[in-house]
Length: 241
Image (cartoon, rainbow, N blue to C red; front, side, top):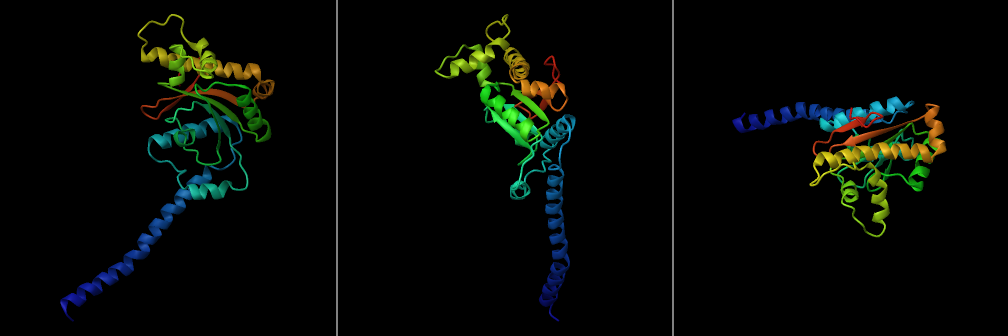
């Protein structure tokens, strides 16, 4: 037997042995990822479970271990119905994608977006639909640092419909601000704006206030750092946790 034939024979044997191993490895990886994603489509029964799921999701995002990445599979899981456990009200800033930073994928979140993450009648109606009809357990008002809408309110920017929007943020501005403004002043305003928005939601919607008092839902604030991807949750007084 010539040496060349022996080498080819060895390669064939090696491929015959290794191919099933590689195929099994790839299949196991895909199955494991899909199984992990399905775990996160299980029903969330309480507001605290929803909060924990968001915190764990942000941790996976930060560690580059997101599980909701097979979108075709996610579509298949949710094509017949949806049961989002949380509604996130956040800013339109393109750097703040809730489904990604909380690693929630398709079907786990309702997302309402408006510059400055402020409430209005349409937002409130969407929240009431989510909690009453779809039994969503949690409402999160998600602000972020370096917010253009907040900066616009501080700078007294006026532009057709934008003026009335920034005027809703202005009550959160510290009246003792000094110029030039520091990043802390701007971010402090953003955090206060989250708290003020939550207060207005409860004041304006008797439906949500009733559900909150009955502990059927929770309404909390959160703050996203666009420089590192971290989400911090706010206590009632606006302190980061």
